[in-house]
Image (tube, rainbow, N blue to C red):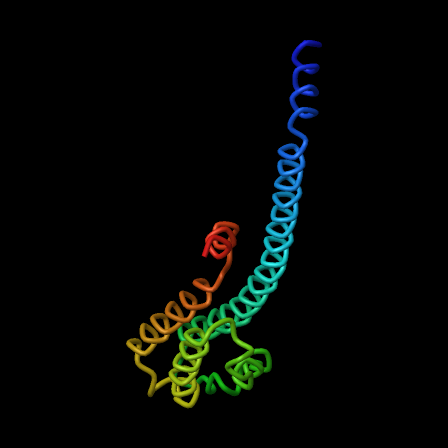
Length: 164
């Protein structure tokens, strides 16, 4: 073992210029690895923020949609309109948000399509409401859920973005 270490030291003394270039290459590689690690961390933080926003949107919308579906299920001819029964403050905040505050444009558009259909339903009395409209609401809701979920970021997304 001592002979190997001694041979390495002898070789580096005889090739001092090459050893300096190797040391410079290692330093450059270390800087690059540090930059990649920092970039991955920044992307991870940004993606966690996006995922938290998507989760908040999905929570608000799913809570509202659950109440809407329950209302439609329990309809009777003498019921009030849904718009007068349910607190819509959380969902109205989403309506008032600009497109730039949404995770992506597709989710913004899907939400407004969903809301347009829901608004029509909210204005109807139980006698006017058809069960086919409930199916339409489900389809619009699933479309919205799809567009929001598609924006979720994973570690695999980070690596793919880094390799671009």
